[in-house]
Length: 295
Image 1: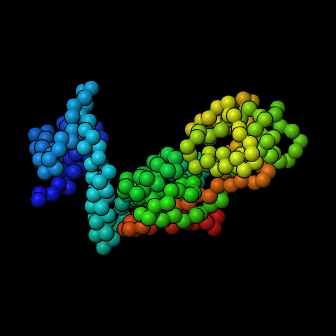
Image 2 (image 1 turned 135 degrees about the vertical axis):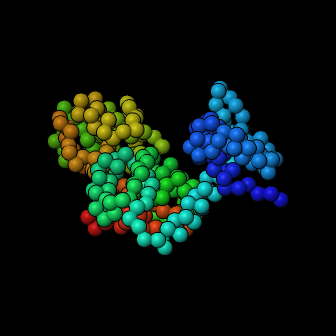
Image 3 (image 1 turned 180 degrees about the horizontal axis):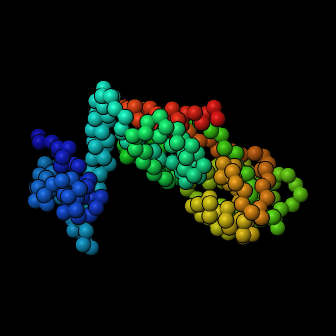
């Protein structure tokens, strides 16, 4: 039985990504007729319709949507094959795709990237940010090479995780709401107007578990996806929050820091595909990330 070719799958993925056959063809250095022919051959081999035109864009059908992840895994496998060969060549160039959360990107990655560039100036490091679950999923599908995320991530035999950094979570209050106590319980901080990180992320899940353990159900007045925005709002006196200590390397004006009682913390670590081929660039990045354990 005929099998799809990598070229057909690559063309299919490119078309889905940009929603236009001509644009995808140019990105692959193909003519539009050649790209269309590859798509027709792919549909003929699989005996299903994969693409349809809607609202002026080419979009995947239900069958096409089902093909997306397997096609991405096939592309990732080829990338690994190329990387495996690359380890036998000398050279000072390469590319590593790193995923992380916004807070770690701001407060941890600059020093790491500086160390990487010093050791391997020709290495291109591409950074993607998002919540930990999404970053781990992108590592699994091969869209990212490694991710620095808040642990734990969902159990997955395809992934390995290594803990690097313990980051305490602490209360940040407007000076006007601060009291004399050096620490706050869940019940005490729940009585304040609360501005919390958005639901669905790992850090927010850790905070919610802390409240549950104390038998407290908080009612945040705002839920945002940016720690930096939360810091600005707390500084403006709009409410209190619970934030990673890492994000308070520079304390916002007109705010007070308080410990939480009992203490809570989050663990940051590396997530990597178990079978990932470690080329020189990725080894350099992993070594720089691993140095966080001793810092």
